[in-house]
Image (cartoon, rainbow over all chains, first blue to last red; front, side):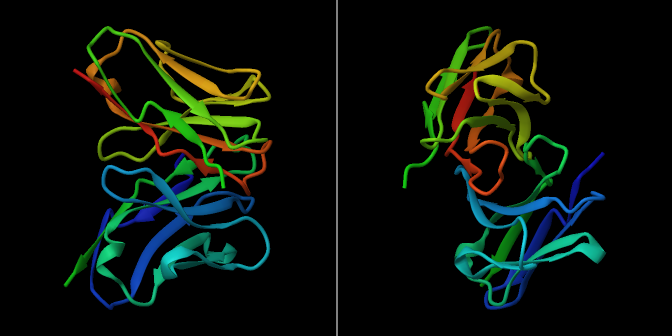
Length: 114
Length: 113
């Protein structure tokens, strides 16, 4: 069963526009949630994570995400896109019962139009 | 700050050969995880170790084996390599099962020719 779903395998926005990458999880118990970014031929870089506490999480490079339990969502946003944001973005979860392995979504490729 | 170290960064092997990938966790981290990311795919969990014992197992082929040593570094051994094994292999480490310090290495890119 898919534990995390990313809506949209490819998102394209104009430079300076709002970035919204969608992620929904399926778990009866709130999981730990992560967003990772991967540039071409590079490793996984952690953007931000939600474990407990404040539901609005701020990350690096101006990104933030809000954990919404009622919607089982953890969407990633950035107010103003920059060309350097073009990359693959993975939403990921650690389920309460998963012995801490991370389960990744299928990824969303973000393209930035000049 | 020290990160997760993986070696080698790149590896080219021929079909049916054997490969060994190494992972050195962040100091004091006692849990290691291995992931495989095929071209255009999301990373898939292979196997994990906690305190030198296997703690979880994912979609790891029988041709692959792994272990964690007394210094907590881990090695992924891959035998009878197939073209489909070409992928980016990530290692991650954490302290116990706490997700707070979960950190990935830069990966080893394995190419099987």
